[in-house]
Image (cartoon, rainbow, N blue to C red):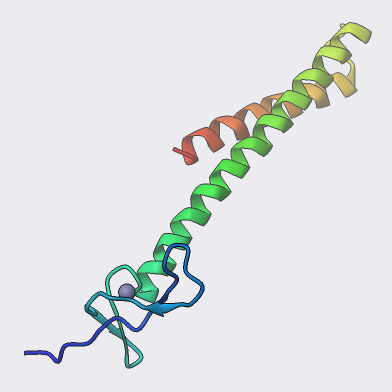
Length: 112
Ligand SMILES: [Zn+2]
């Protein structure tokens, strides 16, 4: 039977002014310190990483949307000024538009 330890994490009670000790029994030991499941540094880091990855994906999607919208506007403007598809600059804009569309689709898939 393993020795019982309380979680060593400091917790701030709601509306409190002093941190207290976590009330739960520890379920893991990390470097000689004991933590409950919620305060296990490995689990906390995993949760943070997951949150960061989600945020990153969201940010990537937002950026891809902006790039795509800008490329679409640039293409539409070029279309009005020069409706000739052989104009080199138009081809560049068209390429930008297509690659930004592909990037947006990829970001949408990755952010799911
Ligand atoms: Zn705890």
